[in-house]
Image (cartoon, rainbow, N blue to C red; front, side, top):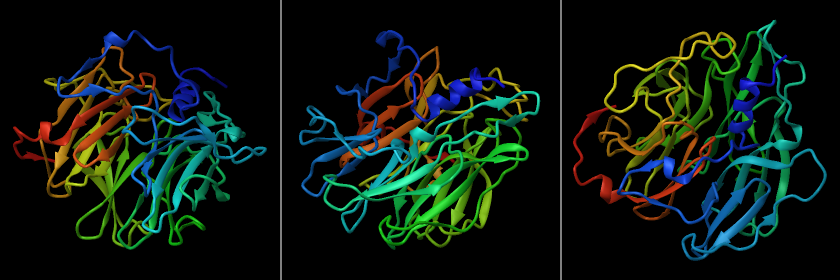
Length: 372
């Protein structure tokens, strides 16, 4: 069994470790962007009084001045394992509950058997949930929702009906690959259900359906973009706010083997940040062919981070703007947050952790319609 590249990638994906940070000046940043002054990576939620709460592993902190200063970190859970918060997604519901779904770092076990081309029997990374009914002061209803292995959590939303939807990646074993279990809650995260799984096939420790992001569309459907090794995001649509997903197909959005992040903005637009299939201006790239990782030779282009906007629920997009570039790669696992209307925080959370701030309007002045 190995604990080399596969194990390292998995650890990065759950924010368990970070690669040695290179010099700050090796990252080119688009001039319309600025660097955030703090090193937090989120997720973030808005509180009722206008402050912003940051969840960082098993702690929370709060800012009242847009990130200039933060309160001292406060633990979420201080009891014995299991159920210790790690990589998480969060949402503040219409009723005021802060719901957090997280990978339980205390259960982490990973190794891959090259001879069998299969995960070890003890591979594990459970997913739990917890929630706060008092703006993050105390936490209740801590519970396991997935007994399995989830490489990384990317997104969670509440729909207009009040349903919370969170797609959880899980590891299949025969053959080894990843699939997605869409969980949902109709009681503000007190209880959870999952009625299906999305399996795209594949074989390898980084193959299958991985690390999806979500957005609710204007017609009430929920749209999921799924990381694959097949040169584009695959997409799935739910007609019932995240319970069942009946339409699953390749999307028209090119992408390398890396997750993206969708966000519905206050303006009504969708924003997408992701790693495109090829570097800007190119139509080819060296592909990784590792039968232990995946059946297909995939693009792992993570040297550039792209941003695009859509006014029509993803039917067309603005020309993708490269907002950061680094020859050494690592600009991946992005996360978007809108601290104030029209302002965006953009984070990368893989080996090169970066926080940027930008104005939505600055990237719309010279927009031209583009196909999805």
